[in-house]
Figure 1: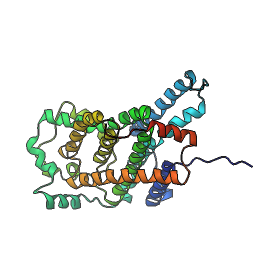
Figure 2: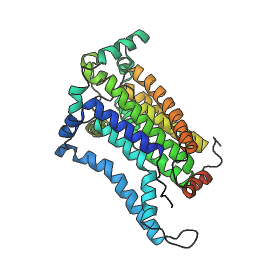
Figure 3: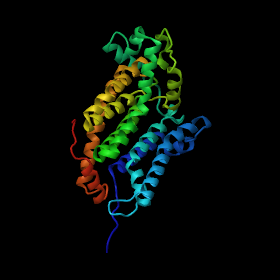
Figure 4: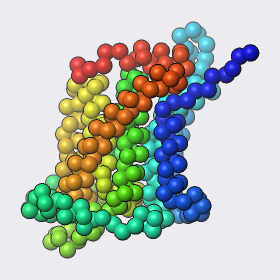
Length: 324
């Protein structure tokens, strides 16, 4: 008697644990009853589903018209495998999007902005977002707004490059992003905050202005969760991007570095974060990379994960990992 092997990946287990945790915090019945999508949020659903739709189309075309090494054509199974490989990116977006629901404003309790501001003021004369006012300039504001916006662009760009050239790093990268999302969700639940620009507008004498600032930040504000301050996932995800870019190619690391550095400065300059949020973001990135590596090693030790042939493809494409 033969048994069909059930493929269980680390991503599956992590996603289940994260979903269970969110449901326990929010309360199953209340979460389901409040999980509605307004007309104004329809574009957000499109933002989440569009990458999956594009991947489905590209994979279908590739495996419908292309041939594999043995001369046979790929089928629906091949398309499913491509989507399965990219699943952690979709799961990260879904976890983050859960915090956009109005339910969380009552579940999370009072905001902790006063605590975060107090921590900053023990480290500096004033929270850096306020101190950076002396450098206020429309051109600088536009540049940093672009860097802040690129937080949405760099992760899928890197993932696309890795998927074509190094699937071992690709999977570690996306799993690290997913772990980062889970850790970030825990931080949002334990330390809800809206950021210095919203919580303490009286600390800022001038508003941020720029040609690109208003449309870009308006788009970001429409998509972001209202209490996504601690830890800073802008910092955490971009740090993970920089780490795996360096693992893949040194040139790619130095190409991304100024953009990522600008993103880190922008989190303070644009008044979204306290300095302690950035520290928490770096620690979150470090934990995410370590935990993702441990999860994949555990998966391998237990004999789970991709089927043998697929695992061999991942392994063969991941040779030569380094900064070279």
